[in-house]
Image (cartoon, rainbow, N blue to C red; front, top):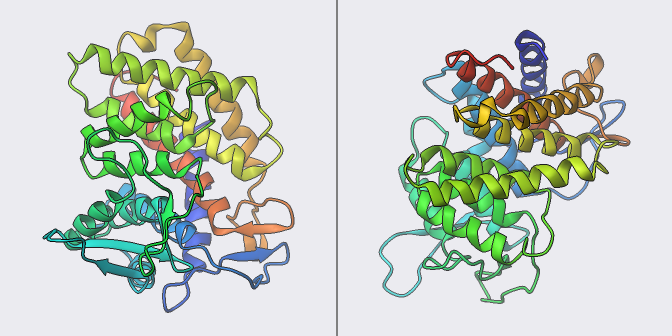
Length: 337
């Protein structure tokens, strides 16, 4: 796809997303095909994911300060963040609550959102990182639990497939590459021991960790490349997601990340596999484009089923935005996507 075409999709998506931010920072969570809001439960994880996508967009535009919409959405999230004290721990531990529960994915997405807010929210980033650490073992990286109630101390036996990948990406985004890498290793040893999940969050984390590892760390980088290849192979082999916009957008996010991982390596981008990834990424982005509305109240939104939800557009917008950024980055290496 051409850069201009992808960028037009991004701008239209962002315009729609901004329109969903209400004065007090809450998003219009769902709309039906007529554009009418659909009442129902609200999800703070998707709220934070939507902030992150808009913050990524503003970073791309080079804005020196976050928009009023992003600031308002962050303030809405802040009202649902609690401060906890664990023993003699001096670092403030912040947990964002969703329906009264602290969730691994919630803290990860809140951290991703706040990591891009301008001016920098140092206290929030430090506290949310500490809160994220409650969910996984610092030494091994293994996930201890996915959610708990900080008021009662009750730990749920719920196991999330995607929370760990979100956490790995959050750690890598704030610069804790070691902890992100340990978590990735544990996912391969445990969750993906026998079969690999089509985890878009994880592949984005793998790409970012690989980007920051020393060039001479051959073993770690080789492990990441092999793991990423397994996820790619699974996405290609089992395309059950093609009929729905959001699963399709998530795989597109994954493929753009993997394409960037290969494209930055002078050796890998000379291989036929790089072209295979590029072509399949193009295919997914072209398929995804069919799900974007171009007229009416839902102009710019991505549709699935009987309407749209903020995360439908968030994932699609992020995929196209990352692709535009990757095209710009690789152009400097004389690589044309």
